[in-house]
Amino acid sequence: MNILVTGANGQLGNEFKKIALFEINHNWTFTDIDTLDICDENSVSRFFTENNIEICINCAAYTAVDKAEDEEELARKINSDAVKILANTCKSSNSLLIHISTDYVFDGTSIRPYLEDDPVSPKCVYGKTKAQGEQNIINSGCNYIIVRTSWLYSSFGNNFVKTMLRLGSERQFVNVVDDQNGNPTWAYDLANAIILLIQRFDNKEVKEIFNYSNEGTIPWSNFAEAIFYIGNKNCEVKPISTQEYGCKANRPAFSALDKTKIKQFTGIKIPFWRESLLKCIEEIKNNN
Ligand SMILES: NC(=O)c1ccc[n+]([C@@H]2O[C@H](COP(=O)([O-])OP(=O)(O)OC[C@H]3O[C@@H](n4cnc5c(N)ncnc54)[C@H](OP(=O)(O)O)[C@@H]3O)[C@@H](O)[C@H]2O)c1
Image (cartoon, rainbow, N blue to C red; front, side, top):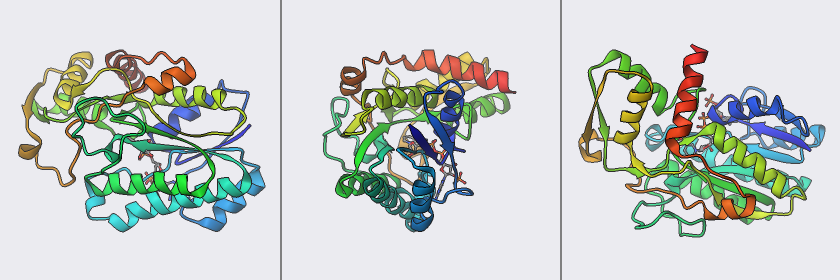
């Protein structure tokens, strides 16, 4: 299969680059905004035709959750409108679109982990633009797999784990919210789960949403404590409320994702968050 990974310089895209080194059954192409701007309809269409793209894994996104409150137009352009362009291109070229979405499409009021068909009700601009992106895919009629994930981190790019490791060396304590609960997810695990989905739907005839995150639901404050412990940082976590912390964007208070469906379809054994955090921090240390 000819697989295109868009937004390939980000966290998840870089994990696919790692995997592609030994996933030699497929012909991989990696692009980012400098080589293929997904907002540019003509370029996208031409790229698909010239390279005979059979599967597009869209890792491109506007991911700055707080900044999106001030840059709604740009967030919408990338997370909603460009996704529509990709979906329409996949429809006309009979390609499969694998798109990554987010737990922030939910409002966080559920009393159990979210299922794929629970109604979306985003509370922030980022979540709204991602939810619209999902809807644009469904409306296009293309074959798609939408994978919703949460609290993504990696040895690549900027993320909570790398920020905490840095602050852990600089400060004696950090304030971290303890009233938002969710599932941290190592982007490498997510990329491997997507490879399993590609193998499961190798005829490309699919229209499904899946949840994927690491196992275990915790507040950000517990996640920070584990990062300091594993990363050997002598830094204290001071748990505070979301209101005290004062972020611009509203985030769901509870966004755990139910992974029963992906387990049933692929037989995947999902690692517990702490196990994956350990491996990622090891990788970060080795890279330094
Ligand atoms: N990060 C999380 O905690 C999280 C949680 C749940 C779901 N997700 C979703 O998971 C997916 C992957 O996230 P990630 O953390 O890997 O994102 P990321 O690190 O922010 O990477 C996104 C990449 O897309 C690029 N991009 C932006 N606009 C583009 C355009 N018009 N054309 C082509 N590329 C463009 C970005 O380039 P620039 O850096 O130059 O803008 C960046 O390299 C996204 O769909 C995201 O919404 C993320």
